[in-house]
Length: 550
Image 1 (tube, helix red, strand yellow):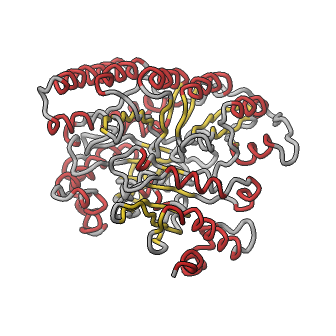
Image 2 (image 1 turned 90 degrees about the horizontal axis):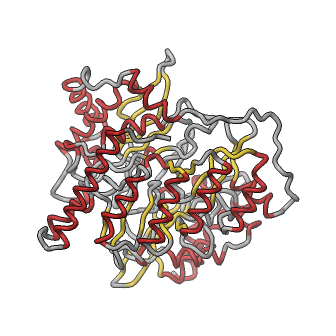
């Protein structure tokens, strides 16, 4: 993984010192609330319902054991003994004290971490495929390009105050495991007819109040032109993006109003005019970035030596759902599940962090990755170590064998924590868990995605779930809107609203009825929810959910 050089260290140290001074002045009353707002946001500091929240950047989802231990220390000394994994692969501390934030930032800097640009109207943390470098379907590893973008975009003065927040995702595989079409800019590594490496470029994706899928602006962009072309896109957005209405300020609105053809012409003209020659990435620069992501020293394993599970055993179920193939023979990719009945989805305790840090060192070259699904991964585990690893994860309540199932829920903190939320998310998740607790039933249903957002900001990305749930406010009461048919991956789709919003007590029952319709109409167990919904449309689902309350 990437290691800071002296310039990185100096930049982060200077930023911590600068914000420490700003915080001290604010606490003394020398900086107004209005003036302090953009300063704290660009350092990842929010003011939530109960306490300030600090969001820490996890570039492209990579963490070392040393960094996990520091996160655990911060949980113990400055929070309430846990933190939260977000859908942008970041980490959030929900109970920090304002006057302690500078010390937290100092601690993060000591292990090459920061919270720079995890909020505000700037380029946010660049996300990527959590299986980058270890999957079989990769054209090339996207992480070096994520790092190049991170270095280029961090504290870039021209793009520090964009019309609205801006998100970039990069993948290198055929399968889209980073939802690139839901980003302001999505990049996929591809090769042209001469086998030269470049990018397919999408622009204008996003969820929230107006969900849109990004559209292609370049089928092929040579890799050396990456930063110049990104700059051209951002220049056009900065020039023409709306600043009078934050709900219409995202680049997706600009792309939608201009049309993709006119927008593309603007970008190409900007690029040809200003950036063709002086912003090209050199081979040396690309190779330098790649040097930090070389493969670990894999053992030459030929035969698979994993322990054979008893049929239907807990270990066997975990192997089936939480372990994936690796591109290197004799190794596996393991999902550490942060989904079980005693914790909110994505939450992880101090003790669990410390133990995972040890397990990563013991079994996976000291590296852990965070995922958009609010889980963690150990990407380089020997097959022969799987049983021993499972026993230790199970003892930590981190081996729930439900990855990809209906109750591998993605869920925002909702109204229990967030000032922006219209409704609570966590009680809805708990009610659904109670109805779908039987593992065999879940396995029979196959892969189904469920996501729950507490407000229209869609932090849980409910629009792209097979079953999405959105909290809404109706005269001060909590109601929930259901969407069906969302997808992410090779085929992306935005879910459609099923019908009128429902009160909290009817949501779990509605999900159960939706699942009943799916099971009744699928051809066999390989017939996915998305395929069935595409065939039937929403009518039979709507009829079942609303029949008894019409």
